[in-house]
Image: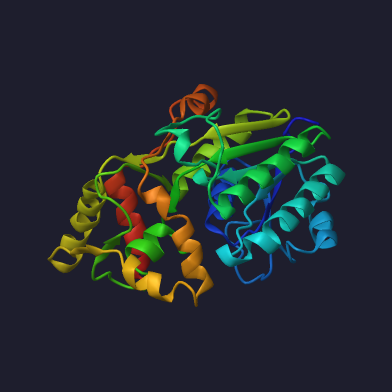
Length: 319
């Protein structure tokens, strides 16, 4: 493939937090970035928007013609992963083959089972015990197979997202129940004494843009973005309450996550069942090792936790 010197990229699933963050960082570096999404109502930070459906192979192929890089930002709701995830990725891979574009793919930790250990590297064993984890492994396997046909791919693997505009996340939907406005309590989903990895979206975009801007991918390559490894949930609680005290004059309490109640409704609500499948990630410590990424881009970006939490909560206060 040609080097990424034309600086032309398209984001498939352009309305998502990952795609927007990478696009914003690339635009700041002089890239021309196109957004591909179902609605043209949201254009920032894209130079243009192409309306289309990621499940429509012809639309994806047409949109990607002439692009240097495909940023894969598609993330269907949990219940639709089995039916849609591989199909939509296949459409992006086919478009990359036709256009000669490279692919930037957001990885996550679902690929790893409890046997992977606490410190996760790019070579840690991937033996997922969940259905969604197996789907994610299958998606990356498809990208590896495509690499043998000339589709160059970078996987940037991250922990749980948080940040302004990131709504369908454990931070928003888990800690605060997804309700807009000033939160009244924190519902921590797991053991407060077990470490958990978080990825602040603006930092992710910055790291991805620096990597893409500096490195021409060859074949299938994977990098870990370490983000914020929070050894103790109390650290996150304190960061949240430091902002809440300034905002409301008081702390907000930490309450038990309603796993018991959700267990009762689990048979009737598919989304709840999907959440239960990933519960083990809150009971097993995991930390992404960023040594490889740092070797390519230098010290990785990391917004201080209090500042990142402040920006995330500020977007809620405006709702």
